[in-house]
Image 1 (cartoon, rainbow, N blue to C red):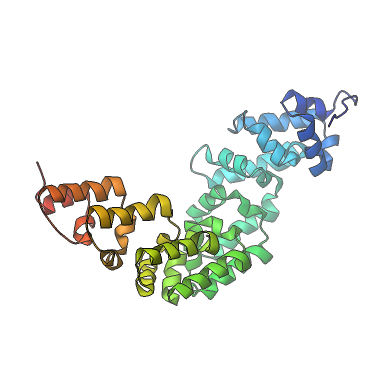
Image 2 (tube, rainbow, N blue to C red):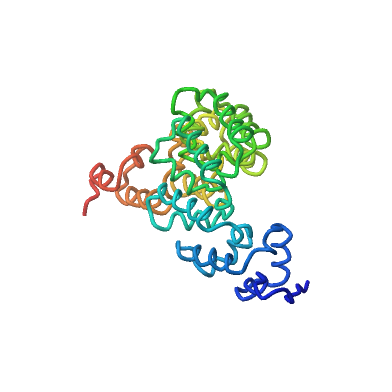
Length: 329
């Protein structure tokens, strides 16, 4: 689609083409941001230069601007600088603000007073420590685009329904996994919690999942959780054993079957010569690295004809392991 450049010499089209944008992309940007066509080239150039000056890589700038063309139309000192400076006070590392903007450019189009400040106050009221507020926003800058009244409050109400009513509990969940706020309660979080209940988890177990492994609540039941449950059943675990495994180590339901669960089970049975019942008694088996811990320690013990339980073998660091079994050279 050819865009005419026979407009006045101040046309932003020339500016965009000089920076590598093709006609199709420019047309799409104009369609999504009507104000872009009328913006002065000098303003666009100043904003572009400012974004570069705060650490956004020049090769990434076209992608940033194409995601949010409005950035080039905003007042530099009225809008961009105040937001960047406010975000800078939340960060601890120089690159964090540039990284957040690169991942979610629309953060710059929001108001400090109308969006960012109320958002920070909302999270503080939930018990998020002040020093963690910045980490949350910069890790998941999309948070600023969510409505406090409709979206964020709905997620908080859901977490409260799980029994996380004690002061600061929900704040811990959000610090651990701020991306949970982006998921639909009805389409993702509630179905996942209902599935976990159907597997055998009790209310206290669900609270542990939410606080320690909130990412589990965010996974799709039919694409991830149910296939993992089916795999464990196929391995020979009884329903009660699976419930115990999930309660003790919830990530077992989101680990890759091919790259994590299957190789560990295969190593346990075929190489170590153990029964899967031993894993049911020691769910932390799935926490440990296959190469660096399981295979290495099994080989060392086998060389000395030493037999022990999985917990005795794995529940210690490398030095204590060597001392415990007298394996120092």
